[in-house]
Image 1 (spheres, rainbow, N blue to C red):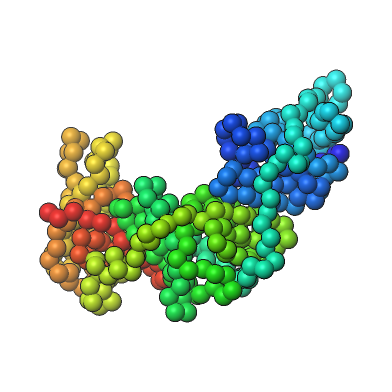
Image 2 (tube, rainbow, N blue to C red):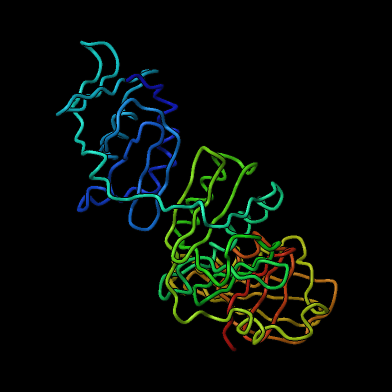
Length: 358
């Protein structure tokens, strides 16, 4: 069968997110072509993308991708017989010819779950935009040490959906509108699945996105073009994020937080220049009157710089990881110093960064 090479690569570019780089278990490293779609599965996530073929079999993903990327022809041919699959690109004498390892469709053991009885929430475009933006922001705080750190937690709170993540150094929270008919209640979307659906949103847009949640798994669909399956993180002892946040943010939060002045991130960037390759990126931050001063010392020298706010701060001194602070400021425009944390926020997004007592 003849394929447009670029089109096939674009289709496989999304599906390959579910390919395992190891070859121990064949189905985890193969694309399975079903005639109308292609599927990849790596035991954590599964991705199915529209791709029309006149064959139903599974091809070794890395070999196929390398062949498609190594040629520059507009079209390629993938032919099959009972015992072999052939790849052809370009003229007979100067082009590329090869046999592809394959296995039968029946040996690709992953099967999509029956989704007909599972409620679906269909996003309006603006809501989808907020949802995926929240996932993107929360990925800045994921870790891998315990279940609550291994992805983005979703939980309803009244008419709102709250997203949380943590890596034990920071907590991210994003609030958006609730999802209906989706069964979303204290579930954790694994990091790899979050990264995959962000790629899906970038590739297919946000005009027709749906989410379905069942016991143990979640499926996000991008119209009829692509659907993504992910196993939920098994968490028998869920973290109460709101309780943790409440321990660090006082009742004065709304009145005390301030808009960050222009150049606020620069005081942390200057500190990073001095810290160089030091493993410890901790700097001393001091609030005095309406000024926040950051000081850093290393073998390269010492730097001290300040940012002036509109209102006075309560006198406060703490140690802050400058590298994490820079990343937080990129997405936020408001600052608050709380109980052992500094809180960066913007709109519906809040990022709590732990601090050290000085």
